[in-house]
Length: 442
Image (cartoon, rainbow, N blue to C red; front, side, top):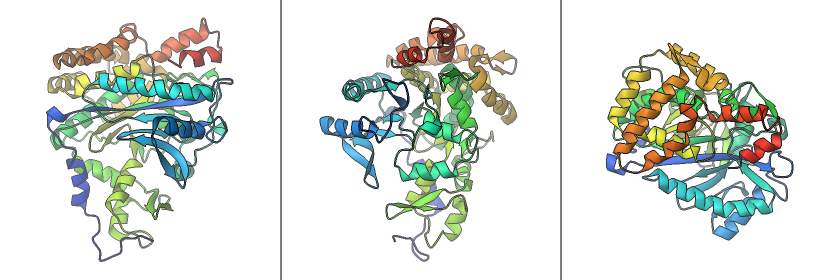
């Protein structure tokens, strides 16, 4: 077994901090990234597509790799994804298909890459009778009928993660995650703070998972609800509202989170929460001692709504289609890449406490834009955030402000995507799940 033994060079705190500082870059090199998950369903029944069946997701990966010359990503010889250059197509625990694309300077470049990928994968999926939905949760199947893909990490997580909706989160939900760069530690923390402040508002603006199991759940974002009810030791909120918050505080959060496992000889060694990373660095585990890969795995197994890496990763948004996925990037880009915009947002929503924000986060899944924050509704703040982003996005002359046009009609009419779905559900769709499925294929 490949172990790091006592007496050899063991991971130091300085090496951990270097991982974050290595992400610092000049503004001229700033890019934006998108991770785009979609739920796969069988076209003939509307139920979730299987990994293992003859017309399932594994065979889709095989066919696509062969036709488009992508390499396999495997786990114990099982195909769990594909890669080509810096781009990957991977599977979430319940077979959700995720595009993770190399970050780009402009949103238009990301849109072009996604359209190209869609033009290549959709014909193959069609031959297998599979459709990908731009929706935040599986509309018909629930977790009891969705098997985990054969990825060892997911089986460990499924056994360990606690919370009444952890299985829903893992097997049913699909989200949009976006990434943004920082200049130095001060810039990273400033953006980390603002991203955390923005998260509940943006979650509300893009809420898109009200129908689950074929019925109205009473929530605008059941996906967001599932995350709030999953293992709050490693999910939820990593920011503690300290005025002097820094890299050390975030590293401390990661290191105090119970460990799930480490990898040795291409196999997981289960820790199952017995120790945290601080304890592991001090005393090891079963004659294994901490290395850089162990820390990176530990950090990757923490799932706060905003995650600090070599970039800022913002995670808590329902999957959306109709070009709203690009509106999400534009909204954040207009704010995070302009210091004046950050200051305006700070004045708008920054005078708050942890408890006020916690209350807001827990009201968003049910009420979305109709949740109340201080003396106003979230829909009122959403309009102001949209104005701020648009004003400063126009100044960068990238043309990316055009992507705000897709979300603007919703916000100006006090709606999120879930509101439109519910209007149709009780109106012209007459609670017909097949019409929701058809609607979310765009």
